[in-house]
Image 1 (cartoon, one colour):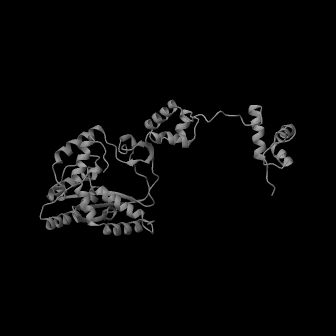
Image 2: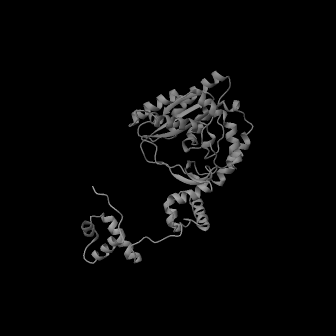
Length: 346
């Protein structure tokens, strides 16, 4: 295979002469050259009237100060806009690498958006009021609370993560979050509870339904009757203290059926602010449980397999983890007060 030399001025002259009667592919065959090279010479001649590269006095800066400021303003106005779209919107003459470097220079990086529920001004005020009410409680006090919740665990790997542009320390700013939506994928609904370092049962909600009913207040009351009631007595026996029950404000928790059952069974319930999963330490347990499922060597592909995996992983969770997340309650409350009722890092 012969070595191809650079095109000489004489070669370029031949190309221009051939242009009258032949296309680039034919010229390339005649001259034994790569068609791409021939096309480049012809295009340059058509655009500039010359076959030589234009001389440059030095590479100009890809972005001037005004363009950098416009870039920074754009990504902080729309945190989720892909960088190539930002460049097009601002009509910047630069590469993705140059634009990233300009943002990195002022401390703005692309990060996975944290998932948090939307907190309205009304919710924020309620969260502040609740936190003020309970800020004097100690970790020992919180260990007598039975924390509970339902969680939906999907079949399949975790879905695509949304990325946002932000400075360090802005992770939980409202504009840097992604709201939590239902994905529509097949899932298993579980209910669980614990108190301090005492692990309660993990229950599959669909197994407590009757007939074709949806998971509703009747389902919930059956779960409380079969599992919360005996667990409350277990906590009392192990700690010597009467347990207080915690639940959030989900509709099935606040119906007359549920309230009547709680009253009839003398279950003391702590009041709870809306849209506050960051105050419930069981959310950390759910995350750990789901992470463990995602890490399974043999990944569950059916509802039955997922239930087996969930039961196994719940059983394997160390009671120290439960104790540890409850001990963080005073810090969670302080974080809400510092965030003026807004989302926290918990």
